[in-house]
Length: 201
Image: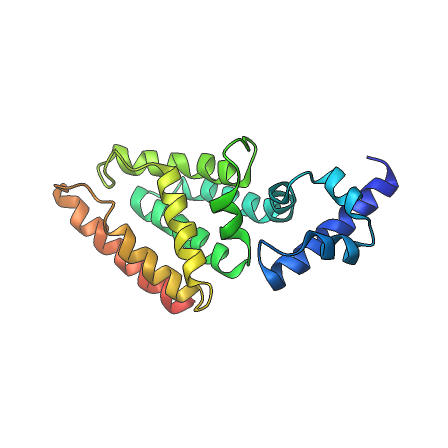
């Protein structure tokens, strides 16, 4: 990328980040272009859709969450690892304005999207929990991402603590219909972990 093109790119991302933090995912593209000191044509040439701009703004946040999922693969308790990560995703999306909206509404044809990155990152955590019977087998990572981001979007006016409380209530429904004996204790750990997340929020 030429130096002038890189400067334009950086200015657009900075202006978009500020506008989205203030106005959400549907911030005016024209105002973003004006704040970046570029024409609308330049913005649309670099980011042909609103969602491509949102992906660029949030990609760093999503990379951090994906890396965190990798760290949690070494946690011995697979259910704790999965629920800890989901709580962190939910809290991050609640406090990062526009992120949850972007993840929920990105076009399905976006194969290299932030949502795809998170699903791929969380899949090993979910698979471990399913394999040891802590989560029922029909649950998908895509379902959990929709759940987490929907809760994040709904809880934005009240904050991450409320989001974590709602996520705890929702996660009580992902256990198997006839849980093995050890799952009851595992669910108790989910509840205790959620209480810690809520108090920290």
